[in-house]
Image 1: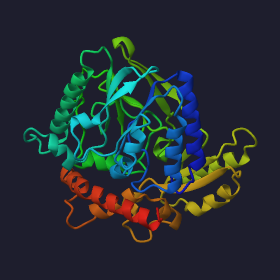
Image 2: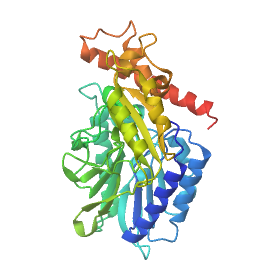
Image 3: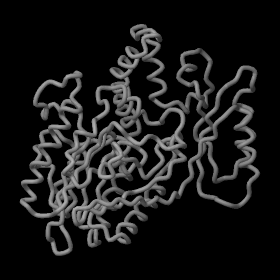
Image 4: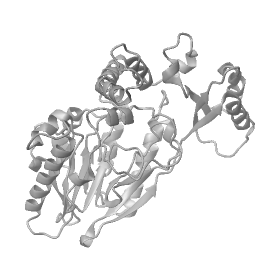
Length: 414
């Protein structure tokens, strides 16, 4: 989030989560991927992760399921899996080389009796998914055919492990499912992390809801940032991220899901995560944003949580530049910080010499820059060939984003 330090925000959430687990008397915790935001996270983030899991020892939470997401390094998560396994913390960072049986874990209750089975499926790359293909995919992709085979084999193996016991079987996944309820109001513009463009336009595609056998009592999914059901099925859901991951989604409430699978019936309750930090996007023309900044500067008392702003504006012909906002920004209270200056037409403007201010350039994401450069390439199909341009972008953008992430991690010494 534009170089903001989120250490205290994360610590506050983890403390709240532990308290909520105890309050709900939850038998287990499922984390459906994207433990970290980058493949090579800073040491402080790794300390918080391990300290939080250790803090659950001795509580009612006797089972923890952790799977890797597309932002994680699966091999990094897997380095600790054997140690965690002794504590009933089951980690599956990567799908590579695993059999279905390797992803199945018995969940224990108070007296160590088995109360359920978890099929822990992490984010799967196309090469890993191909191991589960039984034939050629008709559309040239592997998503539906391979995922369908994977989850079918997992269910069959879990049913054998269940051995007639009347206990629930849950599964996880980290993927982009089709037939979602839709993004909530409050999401506008383009995302800040590149997830949507890469996954919709790239080879990952959308995964059909039909890949999940209906016999699963619950399927906990990760990858989508907001809470939603898949194909209106209350047993197949995304919890969403507990944190704001981009200013385009700053208005969406964050939640965790409390799932009860006892007695053959699945009930799900949303529990909203309290926000210790406020994120806001001020949108409109330069003049409109200046008025909102002046209103914020004139407010006294009230909510004084740390507040981070993105100025998301359009540049009209004849309208003053963003320098007119400087005075209003300088008069903001000390707990309010402008961390992003973003133009609505940034991708179009980036290729025009001198079109962007230094603050605007700093506010551009890697996705904005690479998308503009790829689409302006002489090799890219012309604008009238929209589908061909999408395919061209989807072929190259994931590669650029992966390299950018690796370079950024190495440059930060993390």
